[in-house]
Image (cartoon, rainbow, N blue to C red; front, side, top):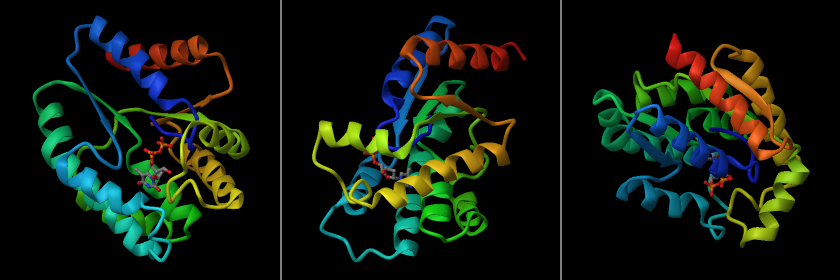
Length: 200
Ligand code: TYD
């Protein structure tokens, strides 16, 4: 599940989990960056608002490291034993935030991430698409902002546009959904795509 900050990913993840469990799957939910002892430790470093001097390459490597540990410890073993994995963000976030918004280049970031994820690319990615202004204002109402959320509106606009570009680059894998639709409607779109994949 991908999308800019504040796009409602957690709600949709919970609803998708219910659906998959009803169809008989054991479901594992992960979040990025995080989900293992080491990855959560890396998360603290990445999102610490005091580390304003962090270089874009360092940032990209840290996200990839957190992801690599999550794949090795949690995602890989779960998939290999037939479970379904729903991840709150995955490699597309790096391609967009670090590759596009930070300007490191999608191909460079993908090369590094291939090492981190191996064969465990998602079967389907849902992009909850939301104008940057709305996402950020939803977040501001919720909590103190982390290092990424403190970035400029211009940065978050690049992120929102970057996700749309990724979706047109990988139309088979990435399904874009208007995140301003009612929760039930979004959930319906997600379920029907997942059902299609399961039936196939
Ligand atoms: P998180 O608190 O999980 O944000 P959200 O609730 O919006 O998903 O923080 C993750 C932040 O890290 C978020 O701003 C997106 C950013 N991010 C990247 O820049 N690159 C990545 O590869 C990932 C996974 C997240």
